[in-house]
Length: 156
Image (cartoon, rainbow, N blue to C red):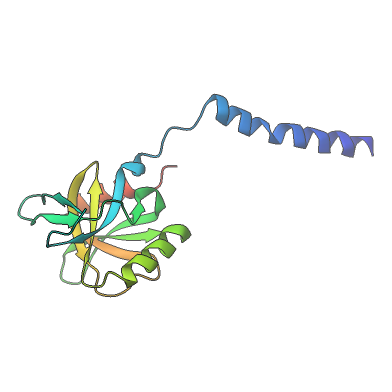
């Protein structure tokens, strides 16, 4: 009986050590916090910010705040479609899925733009509500697919 009490007491005492450790040595910030998925339009919109496209991509006008941050990405997988084009399949966590489903249902015909460290990297047309938290971002080649999937991958 005394052993059970001591074990229970030690468990309670030790369970607080992780919180103390995190206070003394906070984990590094998630680098994906500088990644955002924004609603975007091709025409100027009041209070939306113009961002120049990369390479031959046209400029877009982005909503002032992201729909979801990169921290909501649960998985990012480089893939190819049947015609050989590369893309990254992106799956969001529960909170990101709910937010994107809500916003995308009201933004049909707009675009979902990917911004990393204030650089517009690309955008995809929202042609249907994104209800399952799973969508694809096309990229130019295999290397870009792997680089983007690594940038979006949750830290371990």
